Image (cartoon, rainbow, N blue to C red; front, top):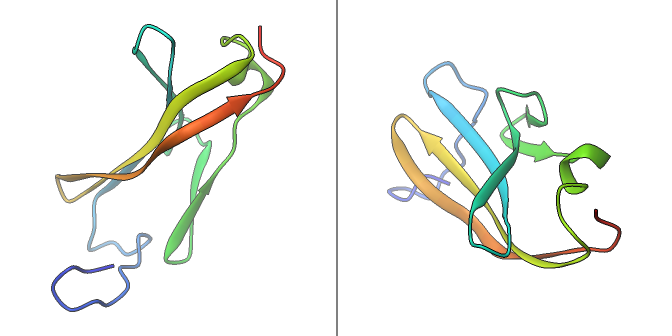
Length: 92
């Protein structure tokens, strides 16, 4: 949403340069970016976006709980959109 007026920003608009990365941090705190627009695992659908991981992405982690998040960059402005934890049930 636009912080100035509360309107929805259409991420597919050519008015915006957008980068989106979904990451999981390993137990050492190192960020492992997994899904991005560049690798095709993040897709802009209408005004929003969605992502998916494949088996090889999560296989680099052992089963457990890890910090994760989504970073979005719009026209050079970076925002941590989601910060949380993810449980990997069947990892390496």
